[in-house]
Image (tube, rainbow, N blue to C red; front, side):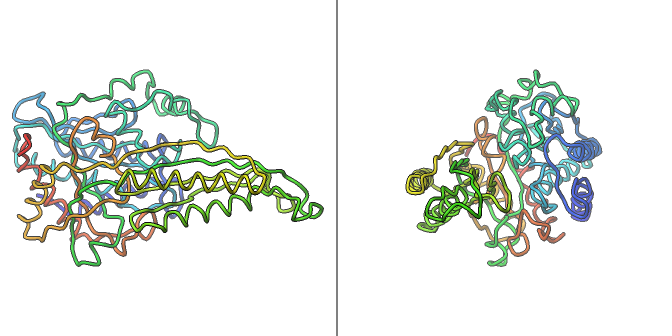
Length: 409
């Protein structure tokens, strides 16, 4: 029997594993991440699954089908968070997947395929600045070079894996082959206001917007704040401020575009010193790859022109890029049917946020189901959903699983 109350209680329980007192911050390969993962592995076992921690730190639970070793329908989401996060982004999808398997197990029901639930160790990319690590490892697209990336404290990912009790040399064992995974489905909060505005509890996702992430470094000349005349300054922060506005202007030119400068650091960072170097990030997203790529090109041209006009040297680096990930029509139809069978209207919409399905698409078709969240708020302690909607989402996901047809219609 599916329990909305248990889903909400487990989201609350995971939220207590946080490095932020009174809030929620849980990054990849942290002590808090290990505690959350251990809790999830325990719930997977209670639900009747074989559960294990894989070599990248994903929590993986498997419920066998009518016979052992069958290909699986994979479900899940992530267990890491952004800083000062909400308690449902990612976690709701993992816990709902476990709840659906528990329902199968309690009814002693086996399907003509296996069901796997995955709590991905890293989707947000907060610690090492690169996202989808757990899902890219499963898809076999994780570049081993990421092991050398260091966090803000100078710890490499390779060392962090070892500190977590994992062997970086075994990352290859995480990879799944196409055919081993029949499809991937993820339940997730909408992270936007559309469903609430339309009075709808659920939505079927059509595609996940593509994104580009850049790092820009501007180098001017540090100097005394009191002695260098304004006209002779090469102020890297003033140039960066102009660049930030250029990013905003470009993104505002098309309603399908969004552009964000989410992090900026000025050095040397003293109140009486003109900033000589500034580093900032740019995140650009759109539902069409050509639109996004054109916008990135326009932003870089504007940044280059600003640097030249202000006598500031610049360096741009592409941190990560993912194209639009379209949900498979044959899976959307099955998800539509599950929504309709619950007596709900079918609403399709796109996802402006990135998800693990973007990586899993390399080995399997993907589907997503959105659950409305209050005010469309996400990545924020105010993130909120109702128990009723959580239960409705779990019931629809359960219908999708039990009615799943492994061969595209």
